[in-house]
Length: 356
Ligand SMILES: [Zn+2]
Image 1: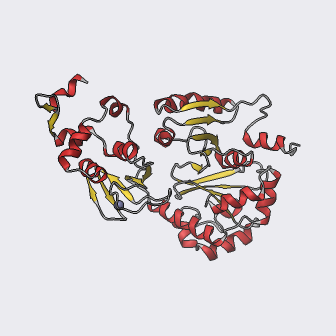
Image 2: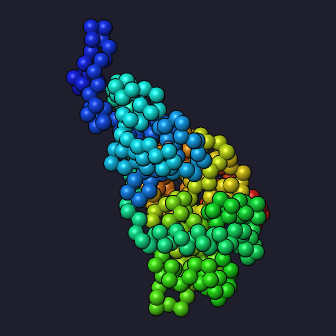
Image 3: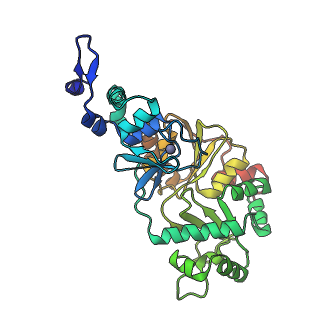
């Protein structure tokens, strides 16, 4: 604490009376202000971080999915009310104070807390591919708002009910296309078009059909710029069960208990957790090695149940994830019931008597 005494000019009573605006701007990260003062959840985007909350108190409240405020290079701009500025201006707006008063208040921010703050990392700039991919996913989702009969049968065989499958579609996570590859190709060509699919990298120009036409179960990631495409049957020799396109992004099933999270591997385990009745927010990694530390910012000081696969890669991932969650001061527990049989879907199938 002693090191920053120099920045505080005090009167005879010891009250700070002068603001060092440069000190405030360099020592109080704008992202920290959004996350700790406005309780905003960081949403990494291309080259910037977005938040759903605005420092301007007269700016209308918005849904949890809103990303109306853009934070980039230590300045913010709200696309809803048009206000913008730096951290001092954000604080002045939010507290309804003058710049001087807001600056003084910010200078009192807990230095130790600021030191431990890990700012979210912006996504690396989205390539044109990813925006084309996002557009394909949106067009297909709009054209196929309900799970197909085949998808319901397949998910049912894995213990996942129609109720959960429909909810996954409504949430924009699950997208199903015709099970027959010829019908799927015709459907995709009509809905998204070959040119867009080529730009998205889904359709190689020298191929007769896009690879995703052979994988009818699609799981769109939280970023909406990535997805996993899965078979609805056992893979043949040399065939991949699932293919992933787009940037690194998790799947998130928002639960009913805002302070409780669960970390699982992949979308099938996520749906399995929901099916088993979890009310937590389920956070599905696109592979147990495939994550970024800043994703777990949202779990700071929250209760987090780790439910990765009970196998070697799962245990290895757990060892790497635990310190990350500890840095965010999450309270972690490990899902380890006495009758655990495999991954969460194996567990669900065992509960439903579906294990062969
Ligand atoms: Zn605003």
